[in-house]
Image (cartoon, rainbow, N blue to C red; front, side):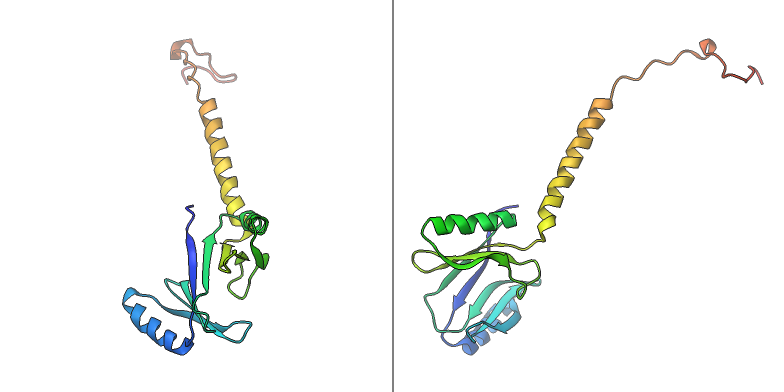
Length: 174
């Protein structure tokens, strides 16, 4: 898996005007509003994207300088480690590591404000067993491959038919 940006959020002063603009402007790119819901502070938020994956989030509230960057993690352990390291480096907690089921059932993330106040997130979308299951399958395949190559020894030479002994209880020629 490559490390990549998972989604970006923008805050706008006029949510309804922004919704109309983005829905129309991005439609030719197959990008549309996939979901919309109220945030804890009462403002609206919408997720725009394609193929069922929202990657551009627009929220009301008039904070035009707000920035949010989400980086995809490869495991929940990485999300936890990101949170600890960011706090140690001077960041401020903006959401401890944990599930956010209101986004989707396996959304596991942590949020930290950088020294400038930008919201930086690490997120993992897969269930906790998915990553470890892939590693286990890879280890099993590698182990099977090693066993198979170790068993490949030259085949023993067979005796010519004339020198073979007949099986017990069977007579030759019948």
